[in-house]
Image (cartoon, rainbow, N blue to C red; front, side, top):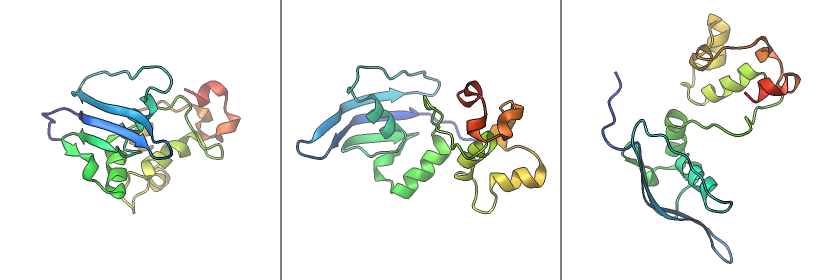
Length: 162
């Protein structure tokens, strides 16, 4: 059984991001935020207000220039790129407006690609699919239409985008 998280899932303390250059661009002013387990959060605001920058920081795709970001109590500012990538692969999921599917891969292969990054080096999702004939965990939770085995561009737009 997994350990229960007792503190906030996400805690930001003065988190900020300024992009260097002449002149420096303050993309996100210092922000404080606490998100508890079970909270629903929407990030809204006008263009240029820092929404994408905040999401990149929360997704560990970028590093802040000020402040701290605690994910399940772990201070992510002290992590190396490799450790941040590993944490991102284990704890963070992304939902994009456009799915960013690789056009030369099938829907199944696109899903397996995401699992490949979080699987142990010797047990790839693709080998599991081939050897057992069973879908990986992500695919077992999702109904798979017959078109899932077609390359992405040959499927209908409705299936490609959800």
